[in-house]
Structure formats: structure tokens, C-alpha cells
Image: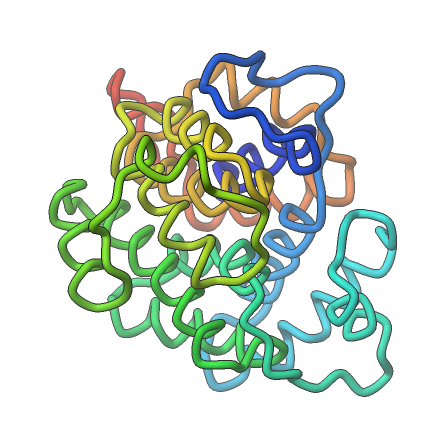
Length: 272
């Protein structure tokens, strides 16, 4: 799930300053983690503490509030901000792309397609219970699970096209006209296409950022799937870890200790 965090960090400096090219410095001192990383790690902590879908929603709420409250300025949307700090948080029929950016841990923890879907629904319905929110989170989780378990890009794309979103577009075809959008239905397909058109982990994230829009969230969604498929080059991994504080790093370490690390499949360096 570090791939989602890396995508978030790389995309952070471009969210309000879009860049319509793949040619940019990847990780710089201007980068930082945002709510995408914080919530991804909160979901990971919830899964670590309770992996059973039937009990996971209550743990997800507790962990998202516990992990999220110390970072009030990390970029939460207005409705989710109130949810984070509410004494009685309730789902609010959202289809925002926050549903999809936080579920990478579900794809890494699942042992079957059915479990991947159940985990995704359990951590999503507590806030983003609109059908499009649930769909965006599920599509992301399934793409990641398929990438992790040996499906090739064409197989994953075909499944997404048939079951979730029409993939009848290209990044070049949408780049000029694509604008900032916070919905699942106009973020998840684009993030998935950034992976489908990629040739490596880094290339996938560059693809996502190159179309503009909600750059950190697009790249977070893409990055989790790209990690499962390609692994993460060691140099990128080491650099990215320096952006996390000790609190967040401890959750990531615990999750990777249990579910393994995907290093760099392209160079035969895969564990877990």
C-alpha cells in the first residue's frame, strides 16, 4: 500500500498547480503527504486490528478518527472533515473520490475476490455510502487485487470495462480537457487508465499526474495498483519513507510486516 502513499506525496504539489506533462521532478522537498495517505493508513490499521468484514466498519470509523484527527490541515473535504471530528459519525451519501483513495490496504489484505469486495464495502460504507462511492472503492480494490494475484494489465482492464467503467478513452484524448473533479465516477476511471497505459511503477504515477485534476488522489489510486503489479523500486521506496512521520510509519511497517513488501518485480526483487 506504500504505492498509494507515494502517489499521494508525488501528486501533492500539483493538486492546485496541475502539470499536463509527464516530465517533472518526481519527489522533491515541495512534496508532502495529504489526507489520502493518512486515511489509507487508517484503513490499514483497522484491517490489522480487525480483518473480518462484519466487524470492520466500527474499527474503520474508530481508526479513521483516531489517526485522522491529529492532521486537521491535511486536506479533508468539508463533509469528511465534519465526519472525522463528529462524536456520532454517520454515512452521508457521498460519491467523492475519497472513497477510492483509501482502500489499497483492502486489496493487499484480501485472500479472495469476494473478500476484497467485502473489505472494500466495509471500510467505505461508513461515510461514502452512495452507490458511486461504493463502486469506485470496489473497482480500485479489485484492480489492485487482480494486479497482486497475477492478472495481466489487459485482463484487469477487460474486467474493469465489463464490470465497472467503460475504458474506451485514452489519456492523450482527455488530457487537454480534463479538469479538477472530486467524484469517483470522474476520477477512478482516469486513475485506472493511468495504470493501464503504464510501463512501470513510476510511469503509472507520472501518467496520473500528467492529466491534471485532483492530482494527489488520482496518483494515490493509480499508485496502489501499480505497486501491486510492478512493485516499487528500492530508491523510490527509501525516499518516500522520509516524508512520513513516526506515527504513520509505524502503521505502514506493521501492515507490511503482516502482508509483505512488494519491492521491484521488474528486477526480480519481490517479497511477501
